[in-house]
Image 1: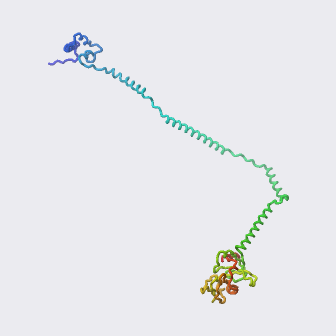
Image 2: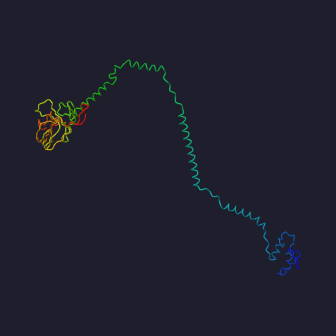
Image 3: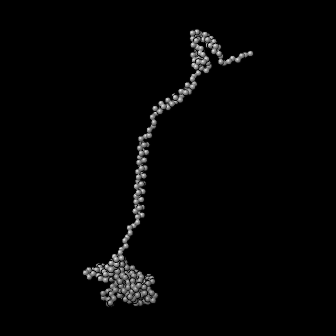
Amino acid sequence: MDEEVDGNESPDVQESLMGALIGARGVPGGLQGLSAESPGDSSADESGLSAETAELLGISPQPDVETEVADEPADAETEVEAQAEVEPEAEEPVEVKAAAETEAEAEAEAEAEVEVEVEQLDEIVEAEVEEPAEVEAPEPAEIEASIEAEVAEVEAGPNIDDPDPDGIGRVVLEWAVVLVGAVVMALVLRQFIFQAFWIPSESMETTLEIRDRVLVNRLSYQWGEVDRGDVVVFARKPEEIGEIRDLIKRVIGLPGESVEGRDNLIYIDGVLLNEPYVDEDNRNFADFGPVTVPEGELFVMGDNRDQSFDSRLFGTVDQERVAGRAFVTFWPLDRVGSL
């Protein structure tokens, strides 16, 4: 039966084994005394062998774990301190600092401006809120004195020493200028542009009645030609007898045309003339013609054919004697209208 062997040999047995090993390796006997250690020696390792013995036996001694573990924190702190000494702290760029300072100054200035504006607004509000100054009412004595002075001035009348107290001379002068200007304008208009005529007879009824007043445009034929149907004013020939020197008639025939009247109708170059301006009761007249109108002459007739003194009796009219064309009736007011 096998016996159990205790892993922890006695010191004597260990010493015997160690001596055998040393002798086998040929180590001098004088060294044997150095290989044995007492069991209570503090330098022996956990296997019960000293460091020198383990070295002679070829056994590697166990490292001192506690010592290595204890030393690790010290090494880490030393490494951190070395890195801190090698790597200096990073400083902020100069441009960033300048920008931050500029921004801070701008904000300060803006706040100062806002404070100034607020102070100004407060001053304006205070000025507007201030009560207006009281207006002193005039004393009753002053009012009474002013009224008495005005009454006295009215009772005294205009100052006789003043040659023109109310500007009468200026008013008279202004009206004189207006009247003179009106007269001059009327003369110019009458002589060169417009002229008024009144109708003394019934020769143009029913187009014009007795005492009608018409305006004649003297410039009508200065740049234009006479047209058939125009109502014209012309002067009588010097040798003709009569108080009325201007006549008013309607143009019927133009230069070079042939005019003929038959059966109370008028024919121009053999063609019947349409005359809406002649009233049916005024168409009765004796036949005449045909009459050829000379160059520069006009054949004229009144609208009241039976009561008209016209070219059937005194012949054609020279255009040089035509004063102008009657274009409007302006009196009486109930007969105002164009011709």
